[in-house]
Length: 213
Image (cartoon, rainbow, N blue to C red; front, side, top):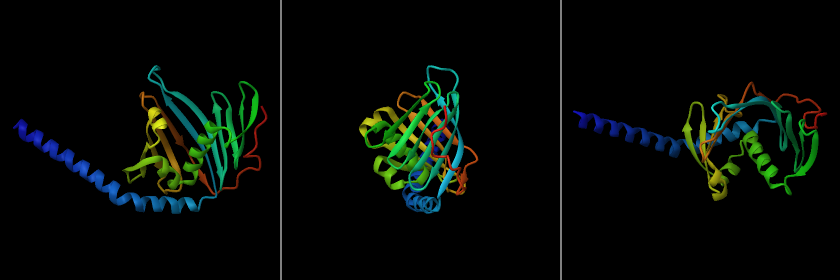
């Protein structure tokens, strides 16, 4: 009896695996095409976000709140509002960052600052749904169709040393990213949730300017 149950369990697992493989193979290309088509119509994007960071050494999550803005093709504003106000703006290849705790402002170039360059590239890729760039750096799978969730595994060995995978979830209308989950090799993780995102609104004139500290 137990043997029959075990065989049925293995059969069920194999069917689930085959179904997942089928979705990844058959649905990935048309899904990506739909996402790119929707993103092509996005001129601006603005959204509050919540960042939840889980560290194994702490029992509670570290919560931050912030604001994100994007204007096509390459303007960004990424700002943490709590617990410490900080962030950066990007206008093409040039940017400025600030920190209210240190009361410092600093200009940077994505060409000469590889860390800020990578951060900016990631955020632009999510905002623009730049799937060509993402596919050049990650092995991509479809984890869910409703809502669309893509799981990304780093191809770069250096990045794979630290990052196990990323889960990118899209909004129900498929026009923007709604969640990003980054899972590190050591078990720590960071979840970004974009709340009440507004697409193609007129952004304030000072959106891509450094705030007064």
